[in-house]
Image (cartoon, rainbow, N blue to C red; front, side, top):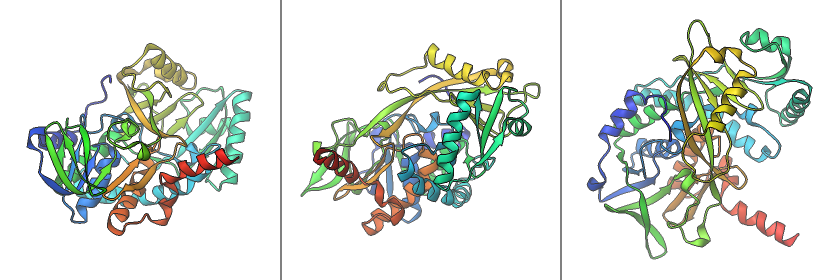
Length: 404
């Protein structure tokens, strides 16, 4: 992975407080495998309820997708054909975000740059307008808050955009956060709540006893646990940990992004802007994040000339001011994508819970996922808003296709 914008102080301090692999604790009530956004959200939520929690991270906190994300909380702009099953969960999680934000900022002492600016989805040229109209009709049928606006109205809202922008959809309820600050806040909140974080400690095997998972092993030793939660992101579908009968239909989708440094001369956008090619997300510290490519190429690391060209050209096509902006950082990451692009939240076996497959909606779905897993651990069942996202739906769809 290429360089990313510097990690905030809180995240660096949490990493300094992390235990070395040689200092593994012997046991915990909850063992979370994966130190990304989803894993830390779950760990913090469970630690706040009084559980002893250990997090094992294979690399460093947020190294898979969490620090590579744009931080969009955009159920309206994200809504597309085939995503109706996900929409209720997305809207429910967005509803939970203000409470999640307030609690997280209070617990960590870190502001996360939560912005309720909305999203503009824009079109250039007649073909794009036709496709945008199709998208708008879908949003309206699904009950998503969206407003069709003219090209002139788009440019009144965002004067920096090119005159060639011909139409847009305003999605006023879409929000965004700064992923670096969210991860910093989560790491600090976890440490303050007593979570033990161990980096560079990949899990090599799960411990089973009497048909139940009772812990996990690393090269440095074993951690016993009442419940093990797999939040391993794009690596969830990799073999080795789970028996074939419990294999997860998750694969990595690589994304490349870049951060531009705006100035008083170049100015910045006032809110998120989406085109068919790129997403542009202004942050309060002066960055403009341009993301992200979509590459189904496995774990192929690094940033490519083709990827950067696509991002810069896609941004320049609608925002001429990018030519004067300094490229501050470039990076790549791996979205954890299930076969239907929806998350998998479920009990796989006694003592074993999974939370993965969030695709490009990890930040949006984090509050609902953390709450769902907490209820699953405490009560043994998922809350109603998450029940459609168990692993069994893939077996059911396979059976239907086979019988047809």
